[in-house]
Length: 320
Image (cartoon, rainbow, N blue to C red; front, side):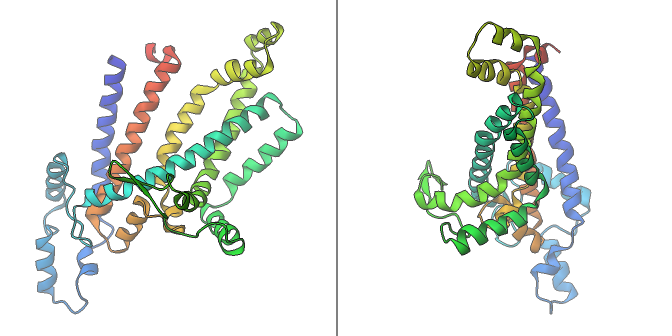
């Protein structure tokens, strides 16, 4: 219990610090009033609009008012959409979480088996081929890969759509694309594009951990006992390689959510990242702040879950 309380308090401190940084950072990106009103507006009209939105107050006053409202779940109203900012972000969140989860699932399903097999067969043709291919995941820019995927699978072959989310199925009032055939066709390309970096990362990390574990005495002892190779690899090698892999999975899942902006923009995926880009274009501060704080909260929550999983996988972490 003390372990969980300590991690929870650290998470709250991070959220408080990030709220200050995010609010101050968004404040200096420009004056949204100049984007919202007509170029022919007078100085009096500009000042009246600024006062109506509360932007004529000092930054400290605006922040305290923001914190007071945020405690009650109110992040302000969007300047562009005239709707609660948190509601706008919440409406786009399922699309982003679905995209991020699918991308991470692709990375896990392919990355861990490939890395594990390469690690237990070091310096083989398979090992060298997998490691060479994984370098592409680090080297090639995401936006370029996305454009090439569209060019190949959508324009040249005509197999998959170029943009949008497709048909969705409602579950408890939340739309999901993966529950329909058309939705899956729309989901595949952006999820594949978003997964490539993490796929390469998991391959290399799993391989490095497997190579380290394979040389341990208990692995040689397990093989000497005559255990099947599949059991040695899946039970002894994989289990003792999990802690750093769990770390990366947790951190990278948060990163996928935070940095899905490029993929969502390229494929016109209606998620939070696309909303962020549209809001930045019109300096819609409430939506930008709401988005950033929601992402920070998700990232912090994921890290908290990872810490708990540490303690479950390895009790030495809990005791330490």
